[in-house]
Image (cartoon, rainbow, N blue to C red; front, side, top):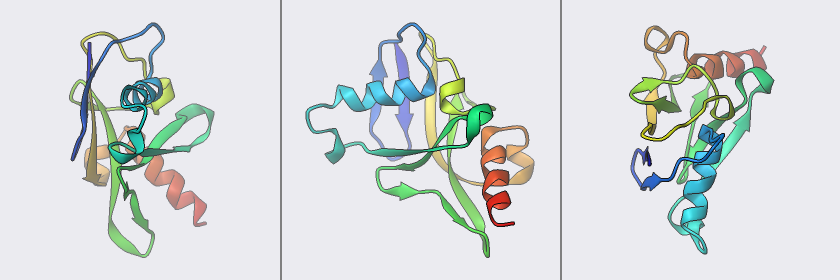
Length: 129
């Protein structure tokens, strides 16, 4: 089983499948709530190119908070087994007994160096130039 925790809920215990990634884990969580998942769990992904892939930009109505003129910035952080991911959802394999957490965190350059969150922040800044 894979434990999927969403800050603010819901939480899931899902069966790991062959080739599962962070993205397919979110899809399995959503599908486990059918026929009416939108009332209890909704998310949005943004694509950041083939190297980084997809990252979460919204869960349950809470969007990334990025206004270039106004810090601090808040983003959805994808962590695997207690460590912020270095890669996007579709580039991160998920296996049995993994623990996945999506948390809404303040972006701090020193804390997020080398993570997907840093790459996301830099991609957002680059769009402004």
